Image (cartoon, rainbow, N blue to C red):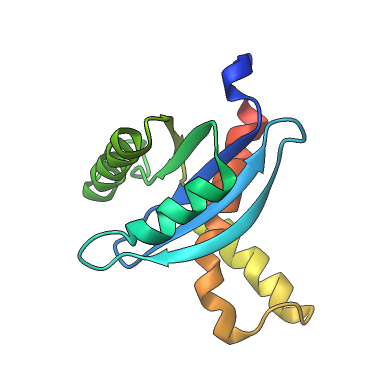
Length: 145
């Protein structure tokens, strides 16, 4: 899809989960993405942390990973991710898009294992796995763009 001027700049991606939400940022000019952090999600998402990230990066678009079933069908988790996306849309008045995140967690796990074996990450850094999944969601979204 062509990129309108309003979509230039930063894109923020989210890997939604009931315990943690991974956050990454990507650039439309370079089509690259980087991990930011993992925010907690207890009774509700850590909106203060997400407010700070959105305020710091000022993304043009928000991308939420959509955990679809194996056959592409909606699941309880994908419906919860859509609800999170709609809350993002109303809270920040930004476009929210959804990206199929099937196999993202496996890819993030593989990258995490590679970085651990090379000495770049430790077991205690496992919380970064969700941010890594958000990065992969964004990379895939940017490549499809």
